[in-house]
Amino acid sequence: MLLVVDLLGTFVFAVEGATAGIAANLDLLGLMVVAFATALGGGIIRDLLIGAVPPNSIRDWRYPTAAFVGGAVVFCSYQLVSQVPAWVIIVFDAAGLGLFAVAGAAKALDFGIHPFIAVLMGGVTGVGGGTIRDVLLARIPTVLRADVYATAALAGAAILVLGLSLKMNPKLMTILGAVVCFLLRVISVWRHWNLPRLLLH
Image (cartoon, rainbow, N blue to C red; front, side, top):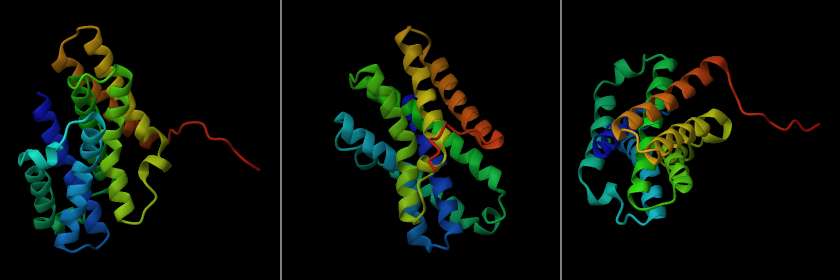
C-alpha cells in the first residue's frame, strides 16, 4: 500500500512539476529536471533525514521511472496541457501533496521514528519537491506564501499517525489522511484561507 501511494504521488507531482516547466518555457531537459525534482525532492530529503539511504529515488528504478513518465506525458501533450485551467493544476498539486504527506509519515514510522517527528517528515515529503521546483524556477516557494499548503500536509500526516497509533485500519487511515490534506488545500485556495500573520506598521 505504501509503495502504491508513493509511486502515485511521484507521478502526480511529476505531472505538476512538468506543467510548471512548460509555463516557464523550459526545453525537454529542463522540463524533465523540474519534473524529477518536484516528484522526488521531498522524498530524498525525508530518506536522508530518517536514515533510509540510499534514497528510494536512487535505489528503486520505479521512482525515477514514474517521475520521467509523468514528465513525458506532459511534454508529449504540451498543446493540451498549455490550455489546462489553473484550478486543474491546483487540484493536481493538492492530490500529490496529500499522497506524499501520508506516504512520508508512514515510511518514517516504519523506520522507528517518533510519531511527532513522523508527522514532520510527512510535511517535508509533501512540500520538499515543490520547494525545490520553485527555487529552480526562480519563484518564491509556495510553502512560504501559501500558509495552508504546509499545514494541510501536516494535518494529513497527523491523521495517519494518530490513526495508526490507535491501531486503526492502515488503508483507511492512509486514504483519510490523504483526503483531508487534499480537501484542506483545495478549500483553502477556494476560500482564500491563510494562517494569522503579524502586521507590522
